[in-house]
Image 1 (tube, rainbow, N blue to C red):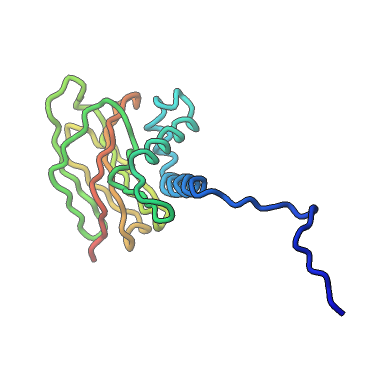
Image 2 (cartoon, rainbow, N blue to C red):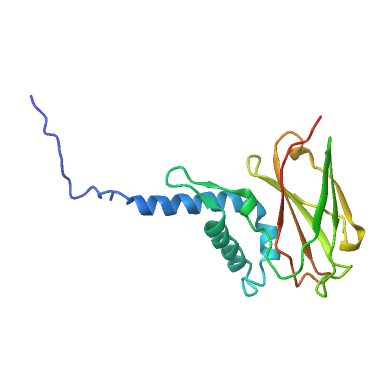
Length: 191
């Protein structure tokens, strides 16, 4: 006996075919969120002024900036360019990175600061190490000020065996003003 095969059923909802543009935008948002999410606590602090005091709006502004500046490619081959990601934004003058030394499990950065009425010797320098593959991000715990000229941090165990991106930024002592973050590079611990 033959069975009847249904080719149309009003009870079964139709799945609309998504347009190319919609799929491209969804992928851009997924890539941006995946890259930024581990950095959320830092971004909430450094972009707070741009979020008008709201941590969620601050994260949204940083996400928008990443999508505008740091995403490249055409759907489905889109990707994030880490060197273009701004994890902090502001008007403070940044420090000039002179030397980056990575030995075993320690990262040392030597920097100098030019003369500027906005730059104060007491401005704090912050290093952020981030591995998107491991989903781990960290920052220096000890205070380093602009006048010191170098920053040395011991890397945590999750960053020992994976390549990580390093960023540096400066903020005022009261954390009200920030510099735009500087991308140091993709680094790997040497044994």
